[in-house]
Length: 258
Image (tube, rainbow, N blue to C red):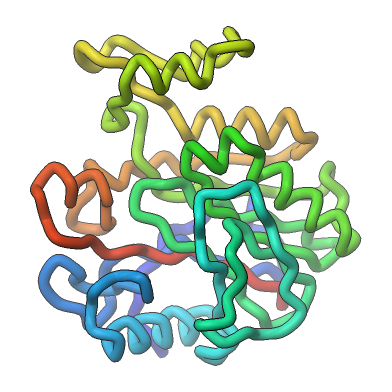
């Protein structure tokens, strides 16, 4: 049994028959800036270490390594449907993966962006979405829900959980960023605060939570854990940038039916 550590998802997603986890950075074999459960194949970590870390995650979920899959993430509004495992070098370019195949774990990698896990337990349909601000604004969550519906899910039955991500307190942005969200949509200004410094700070998890509810999801929660502020348990791209580090680790979030 793998010793990878996970956060429990929000209560709304803890439903029978759905295994899932927001995995932390502990419990792996990577070293240095990647210590220790770095699951990012796109990092410059040793490939053998990454594959061992992913195997530990798969074991914790109760599936084989080949059954833990994810997309080649590109900050898009594209969701794809998986019916069977694919090889890592054949992963489609997308930012969400949806499946109704029992035993197939769909996953996303993050290091400040928001991982969102979704499930319709009655229909046996799950999804994992990677939502940075670009994908969030362009509609990655809505695309994920649409893909789930095509497999028999109903939006009103979907439960969703937002995992560890950069918090508003830590997410400083520029005025042009704020303008991009509020131009033509002045109601979006509520997701920005000037209370944390001279520049605005954006609340990406809150923005995504409201988009889930606006799409018709009835049960959705944010576990409220900041990647930048919790170095001992989470990787953060922004932290690596602030320290001028050469690279950064990625944590994985995954979900499956059965």
